[in-house]
Length: 478
Image (tube, rainbow, N blue to C red; front, side, top):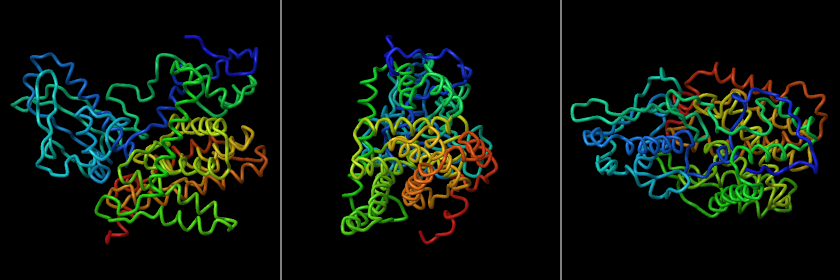
C-alpha cells in the first residue's frame, strides 16, 4: 500500500517510538462511530454481532457434528440479563442468528422479532435447520460473577443436551465484542503510523512532526484501514450524514416510544418552540436540546443511529454537529476534522478506562460523549491542542460518578434528556477551555481518565445498567 503524506510538504516523520506497538490504540474511527439500530450498542449491536459470529461458527462445523445439533441455547449474564429485555438484547441475538448485521438490518423488522413468544425462527447451517424462539433464552438475573458485566454464552446442544459448540462473548461497550480467550484490545495486524496510548504521547507526536491532530488521526486511519484519504473523508461525511438523518427523523416524528413507560416524544414540540424564539439570545441552546432529544428518541425507538461512542449517548455529538452545520455554518472539512478530534478522545477513554455503562455507569457513555463533543467544538473553532485537551478534561470531570439507572431497562428515562444535558455541558466545557489558559489547567486528560476508571471500579453495580437503584426504582408509576 502506498501511504499518502498528510503532513506538510517534505515533512520528515519522527521515528521515535512513544509507546509499545503491541498495546497502542488501533481502533478505527469507523469502529467508534458505527451505524446501527438502537437502543443500545452494548445490549443490541454487540449481541447481534456476537450472534452473527456464532452463526458463522455453526456454518463451519463438520457436517457430522452439525447433523447432531438440535437446540441453540442463549445464556445472558450481568447487565445483559438485568436490562436485556428493555434493550432488545433477545431480539438482537435472534437477528444475528438469522444472518442480520447492525449496519444493514431493517430496524422495523428487528422490532418485530419475538413480539409473539410462541413464534419460532429458523436458523440454518450446514444443511441443518433448528428453531429458535423466546424459550431458548436464559436470563441469569441477580448473578454478577461473570468475567465481564455484559456476558453472553451461546451453545449448540444435541438431543441429549450435550454441548456440541459453545462460545462465550463479552459486549464491552460501543458495539465492541470479543470472544473468551481473545484479547479485548486485539487490533489489526497493521500498526498506526503514530502509535500512542495517552494524550501526552499523542501530543508528543504533534510536536515532534509539526503536525495537527487531524493530520495524525488521518495518517493512523490510512495505516490501519488501507483506505485513501479521500475514501476516509467520504466515510466521515457518511457518518455525519447518518447522524443528521437521525436528528431530522426525530424532529418530525411524534407519538409514543416503544415500551411500558409510554414516554411521549418531545423533540418536535421543542423544535417548534425554538423556532418561535429564534430572536432570543439563548435560542441556539433550545435548538441544541431539540436536536439531541431528536436523535436520542430515534435511538430509543430502535431506529438507525450512530454510536458516538455508544448508542445510549448517540444524541450528544449528532446534536452538536447539527448545530455546527446549521447554526455555525462550518464547512465539511471543519466538520470532519472536528469529528477526528472527538474520535481521539473516545479512543483514549476506551483504551484506558471504558465506554460501557455496565462498567463505568453513565459517565462512560454520556461523560465520554460530552468530552468528545467539547474537544470537537474546540478543534473546529481553531483551538490549540492544549485547549482541546482542556475541553475534554472538563467534560469528563463534571460527569464523574454519573449513574446508569434506566427505568425499566429502557434507554429513555433518564437517557434521552441526559444526552441533551451532556451536549450543553460539552458546549460549556468548550467555552471554558477556549477562554482560559491551558497552562493553568491543573488536571490533565490522562489523569481524569485514570480517575474515571477508578470511579467506575468503585461504583456499586446497582448503578451500572442493572436498573436496581436510583431513578430505576424512584418512579415505579412508570
